[in-house]
Length: 261
Ligand code: ADP
Image (cartoon, rainbow, N blue to C red; front, side, top):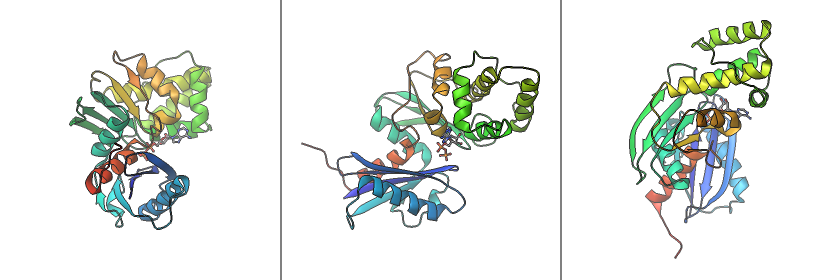
């Protein structure tokens, strides 16, 4: 028996397959686009290919994420908050504040030393402090998103942008560039703005674990957050896949769990 988690995110769909012992055997990721169900099937196929999944082997699937309720073939659905907490605790079993920066929202989730979910905060109202903010600024600067992160690494830091709104922030960035601010410093300011917006959502308590595509692809984010919090800041391996992993682990717990003796 195999267990799969599919996280149909607002921007990227991710899938993780694990075996009866909870060992991950494959992962897949694709841009979500408009058709949640089609993307869920494709991303599961991608994880199966990665896992060299044996044809016809039994599998149970849990869906999570923005598009989870469109995945009719799933054996169960679970919220992103529960899956994120479960997936992170599987890799990092400690009390922690999970900060998940996704394509269109940011979540702060508190987990205790037993992995029990505490309170959580979700920002879905505004692009500030999300991947969408970075995508928009990169677009306005005519840069690839990955390039923006690389530029920021060499910046000395200017200051966080004063505009909260993404549209106004884009104009502010162009204005600063025209006034001669170094592109590296400016790129660092853009990432610093994301950090400031995210840290406005809640006080980070204890050790902090960072997840989601923004952090996974832009190491500068973790570096900037480390400068601002007292606790240990960790980015787990495959940080964009933690909710999908959590969904797979929850499927395994529900439908059949084995431990190596
Ligand atoms: P969601 O689950 O909401 O779809 P993810 O956690 O998958 O979001 O993160 C998506 C975000 O990750 C994108 O909006 C983008 O900011 C960032 N991202 C994804 N791939 C890259 C990349 N190759 N380089 C830089 N940033 C990336």
